[in-house]
Length: 75
Figure 1 (cartoon, rainbow, N blue to C red):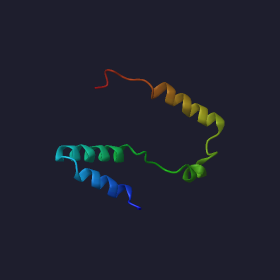
Figure 2: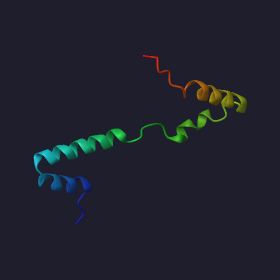
Figure 3: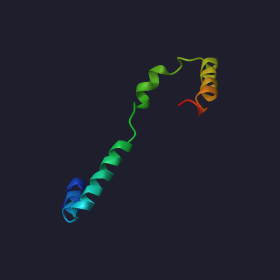
Figure 4: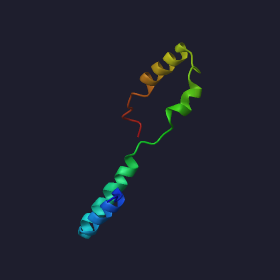
């Protein structure tokens, strides 16, 4: 018996009350949103070595000094 996961979930959903079906749907949507998205590392290899060690260190320092601070009066 080779039943797909989707078919198994559907069978379980059919036996649940509608309120719980909605909860399952919301959970499935939340999982879909939380799935990491991005670019495969293989596609980023062309950027390897673009920055010198000094440039990379300068960028790291600038990020640490500027980006990790919260301006509470900003709004």
